[in-house]
Length: 524
Image (cartoon, rainbow, N blue to C red; front, side):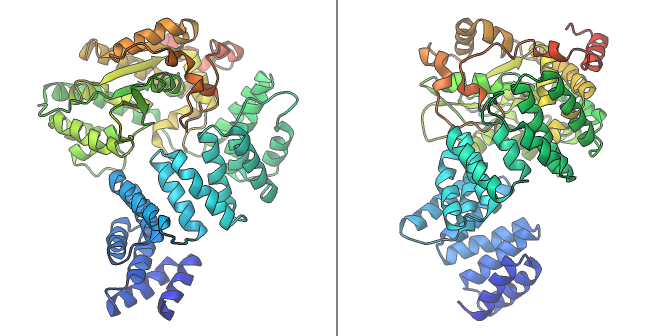
C-alpha cells in the first residue's frame, strides 16, 4: 500500500476524517482506479455525515476490489439511508470474501455484526461479534455487542458471563449493567442491587444515570421491593424528562392529522395492490405485542420479521416530503390521495430484506403501525391486523417502567405518568376511529383475555389470520427464534398472571393518570 494511503488509514484510525478525506481525495485524483483511496474517501465522507457521497465512493471501491472490509462499510452506510435490500447484498458479498480466506480486523467483524443486527438477523450477527472479541478482547464496545446479541438469541447464561467479563474491564459501564439486569428475573438471594446503587451513586453522567436507574428499578421490583422500585422510577424519569423538550401537543397534532387526512386516503386509488397477506401486530408498546408475535411465529406457516419501519417509510417515500420525522402532519397530508397500491408494493419491497426466503407468511410487529391501520387495510387488502389492548392503568405502568430507545421520538411521552395517560386517550380514540372506518379488519385482543383464556384467545387470533389450528402456538415459550425487544426474557416463559392488575401496587402514584382517564370517560 502506498505511503499516502497508509497515512490516510492512520488518520482515520486517529479519528481525523477531514484529514483522511483530503489525503484520500488527492490520491483518488492521482489514481482513479485505486480501490483503497476510494474506500478511505467513502468512509471519511460517511463519518463527516455525507452519507450519500460516501456511498458513491464505497460502491466504486467494491467495483474495483472485492473486500469484506469494503462491503462491511458499504452495508453500514446503506442501512443509514434505509436501503436494506442492497445492504443485505453487500453482506452476502462480504461473506463470500471471508469464505475464500480474507482476513479482516476486529472493527470489520463488529461492523458486519452490527449490520446484521440492524436487519434483525441476530443469529447471523453472533459469529462476527464473537470474532471481534477474539481479535480485540480489550474493546468493551465489541464485548457489549456480543453480550447483547447473546441475550437476543436466548443464550442468557452465556450473555451473563459476557456482561460480567465486560464489567471486569469497565466496572461503570452503564449499558452493561442495564443489559445484565434484563436477562432474567432476579431473586433475593442473587441480584445486583447493591452494585447498581453504588455505581449509580458514583456517576453524574446523565445518560449513565438513566440506564442504571432503570436497571436498579427493575431489580428492586424483581426482589419484591415494589414501592422502592417505583420511587426509583419516578426519580429517574423526572430527571430525564427535564432534559428533553417533548410537548404532548406535537403528538396530539399527529393524531389529529391522521383522522383529518383519512377521507383522502379512504378515497385514494388502490392500483395493483399486493396479494400478500402479512400479519400486523399493533398497539401501545408493552401491552403483549411480543407475546402475540411469539404465539403466531410458533405456527409452522408463520415467521416473524420483527419490528419493521417498512410501512412508515413507504408512506414517507410516497409523500415526497423531506421533513425530519418519518411521521408528521405534513407527511400525512402529502401522502393522502396517492395510490395506496403503490404504497403496498413499496412496503413489500422494503420488508423483503427482513424476511427469510420462505413461502411462510410474515409478521410485522412494530406497535406504532396502529397510526397507519387504515392505510394498511387499503394498501394490503389481504393483510391481517391484530391490535393489543391492555387495562389503561397497566398500560401506563408498563410504558413508564420501560426504557425505550431515547433516540426515537415515538416514545418521548413515556417519561411522565400524565403524558402516558394522555397518549393512551388518543390511542384509544384512534382505535375506535379505525374500527368504524375499516370494520372487521382489526381484531382487538385484550392481554388479560390471553392470560386467562389462552387457548380460546389463541384460536380467535389464528382464525382472524386465516390460519389452521396448531398446538405449537400454546407452547410459544419453546420458540427458539431471536427476540430483541424488552420482553425477551418474559416470552421465553409460559404465560404468567403476575403482570395483570400490577397497577394497583402503585395506585396512589398513578393518580395523575386516573384523573386523565376520568376526564376522558375511560373507566379504570
